Amino acid sequence: TPVWFVSDGRRLFALTDLHSPKVWRIKHNPHVLVAPCRVNGKLRAEPIAGRAEVLTATADLERVQKLLLARYKLTYRLVMLGYRLGRKLRGRPSVADGAVLVITP
Image 1 (cartoon, rainbow, N blue to C red):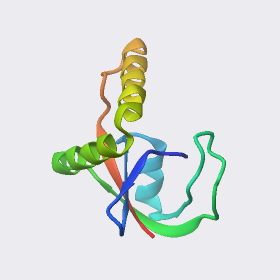
Image 2: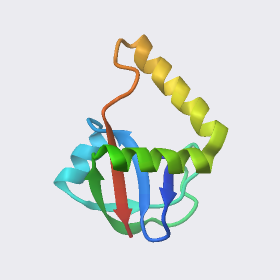
Image 3: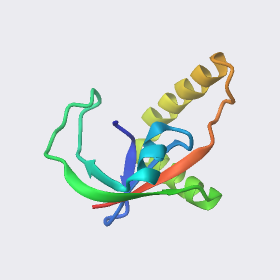
């Protein structure tokens, strides 16, 4: 599943909903495949193996959120606005319980 990510040079970080299928799968099997892809999900390179973990501390969530805003700027803000509006229209809280996915290749 495509996600927005940032890197510290050693690891990849992404935000997702704590209750998403991604989190459930990682908790049951931390072995993942990662690859760069286009917006439509088409792979741009061969996947590589990695190990994922899920973090839920507020400090981790805030740190990754700031990194994503710095990398994607206005585009990320607009996508997140649409996400929040969609959740509100479906009667869900405007912001989901968050989780940070940390992937080490």
